[in-house]
Amino acid sequence: MALASPEDLPRAFALTWGARDALGLADMFAPDAEFLSLTGGSAEGRDEIAELFAGELAGAFARARLVTGKTRIRPIVPEVVVMSQRFVLSGIVRADGTDAGRIGAILCATLAHTAEGWLIVAAQFVVEAS
Picture 1 (tube, rainbow, N blue to C red):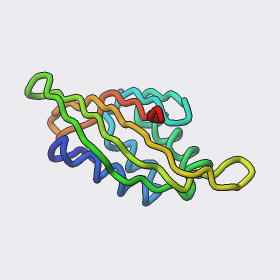
Picture 2 (cartoon, one colour):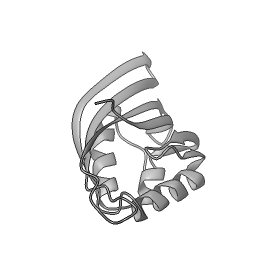
Picture 3 (tube, helix red, strand yellow):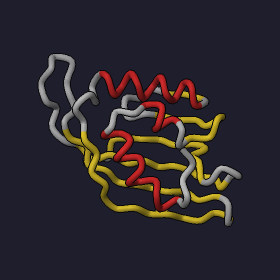
Picture 4 (cartoon, rainbow, N blue to C red):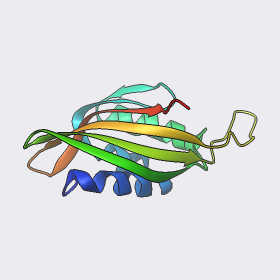
């Protein structure tokens, strides 16, 4: 799912995450995109990205919710932007089934405007230092 504008990414990402839609999340990425996930998993291309999201959304993030925070968009050239999006992530499940509490997380994404619309070409989703 290409985006109409980079500003649409935070809400679309949070809603698609909440729906546990791994394919929908992967569709926000370019076919040859690269992704580093919150768990440290790395994926290249939409298929690997979808697999990575599917595993995480079925595991530690099965009940996790994302709440959007501060957004920063930095245009590089008219067709490329870098976005830094803060989220608060709650409902994380530990391996023993207990709640791990909430954490701050940052999605740093490079988006490019394509014939389809705006797509993520590279992204890192990391835990924010406390």
